[in-house]
Image (cartoon, rainbow, N blue to C red):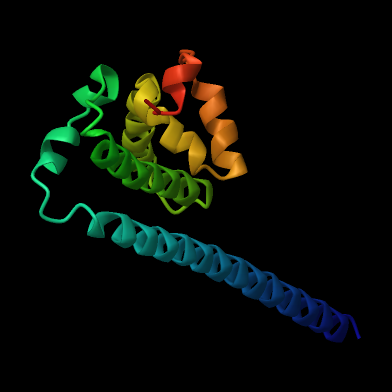
Length: 157
């Protein structure tokens, strides 16, 4: 009778272990699906924003991070803002992928550096805040090192 009882216990433990394994697999599949959905949403919005910039030679110049700190002319502002909408989407996507555990630490560190550089430029940072999910906004608030004047923090002239 002891052997039969031991076999039953082992069988129950095997069933429990397989259920735990299946549960973990389902959780992993859900995380991957959320990551794919986030990436697809970012790709679609980026494509829309990029369409208006195609063929514009100023895009390359205004994509230089030095403009995050120095500002742009009134004529350049619409292009600059569109570039920063795309930048904001990309950085938020990196944050979301990292939070899901889908972005390696070294890649996240690079994205975090880009976020910090963008946050130092008052003209561009409003795009990050303007398109941020609540959790990303909370992250941005936590790393904000400077206060932008109200008349510049929203990129309006």
